[in-house]
Amino acid sequence: MPHRPNRLYLSSDALVANWRALARLSGPAACGAAVKADGYGLGARAVVQRLIGAGCRDLFVASWAEAEELADLAREAGVSLAVLHGLREADLTLLAALPDVRPVLSTAAQVARWRFAAPGRACDVMVDTGMNRLGIAAEEIAAGLLDDVVVDTLMSHLACADEPGHAMNEAQRARFAALAGRTNAARMSLANSAGIALGAGYHFDLTRPGLALYGGVPVAGLVGAICPVATIAAEVLQCRTIAAGETVGYNATWQASAETRVAIVNLGYADGYRRALSSRGCAFAGDAALPVVGRVSMDLVALDVGRADVREGDWVRFDDDLVHVAEASGISQYELLTGMGRRFDRHWS
Ligand SMILES: *Cc1c(COP(=O)(O)O)cnc(C)c1O
Image 1 (tube, helix red, strand yellow):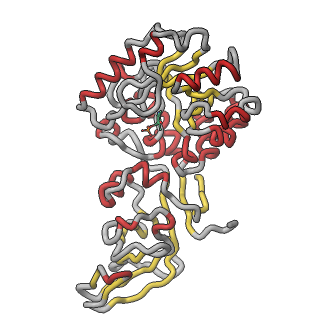
Image 2 (cartoon, protein in one colour; image 1 turned 60 degrees about the vertical axis):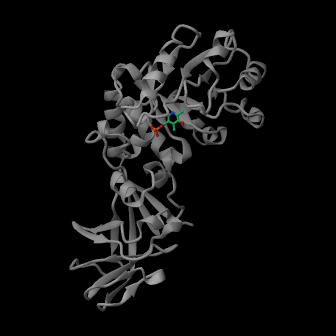
Image 3 (cartoon, helix red, strand yellow; image 1 turned 135 degrees about the horizontal axis):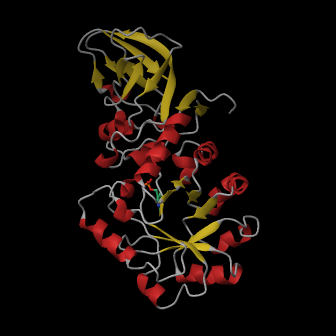
């Protein structure tokens, strides 16, 4: 698809400014970047090039396939690249080809696999401190599971960082802090984006923001520090005037109370413009807000253009404030970003 019908406008300045803001908020801790899921849908290679340029030295992906996509960039820059989902049997074939990549080991079986497959090579380790997702138990460390394993970064993950008052945060922080000095790990890392805002006690040696790099604001403590990075733009395919009493779209869910100018735009739920934004989303032509009217279709959405001068062939921009869109749709900022479809040309500025 050389000419995809829709555009994603991406701001290098905003991405870099967000990383710098998170690095500043991380205090003396280094600030890494979670670039899994294709850089949260924005395009991992382009994201990584810009973050490396800004000074980021630690990258996290989910799988070895994602690591393979980025390994050349990381190697050229001498930047660390870690695979959060550890080392499955099927990943062993990639170890030799990706000699600088580290798995984040999270089970005793993975530790055994790593000892056998890559003796002496450095890895990272995930320890579970209460989320009960991935990670070895603190008791396994005490029992010697990591003795003789070269650990670069010992990490854990917060379950409730976006709820600053939640008791889980302090409980996880304390359990993690108690592991200091109990392994040969060179560094410790706990905080994701929201965890950075919890304060210095959560920063340890390295932070791992994802969402906030890409313009997401998971917690009030980051409001004002983070700006939008990605803006969807789509083309008006047809304009029409709807008479009072007429309806728009599938199931006739929206009815004009007065004569209304409507633009039909080349974007729909197949592009990740969620159906939950039916009669709730918003686009802009210049400063004029253009509310979504009626159901979002697979490939189309209708906008009330009011008195704005919007014509066939014009491009409109959709609301890029992820907090707004998440509130309007009831869908998380994470899902909104990673759910964007494949029909966008990415335009980096
Ligand atoms: C995805 C992920 C992150 C980044 O989390 P955000 O909430 O997007 O900042 C950090 N650490 C781990 C282990 C992750 O899986």
